[in-house]
Length: 100
Image (cartoon, rainbow, N blue to C red; front, side, top):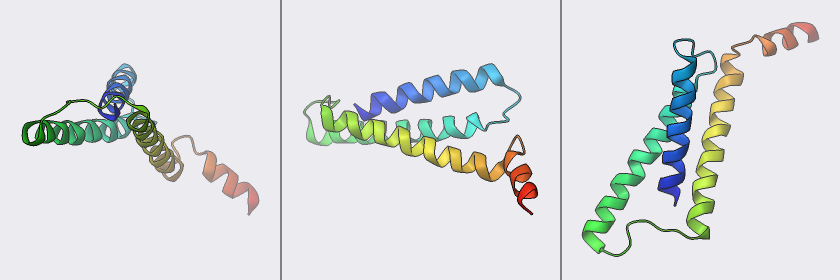
């Protein structure tokens, strides 16, 4: 399930990024790369596990769903840290100037 959730997040993020291109003010391209990287990593993992061990290709259960959601939340958390550090609207700079 985590493969499907990250793939869905990758497709949605890529579509939003493409609609906003070429202005990538909020670094949606980076978020899209996070999701595509996770999707490709798990796709390779699933294919190798399926070829070597057999069984079901996709796990659809509560644990797999929670893992997929946790990865999406973590990617969004890292993306928000990148946004705060890059400060595309200058909000952090204004707040810091106001305090000094």
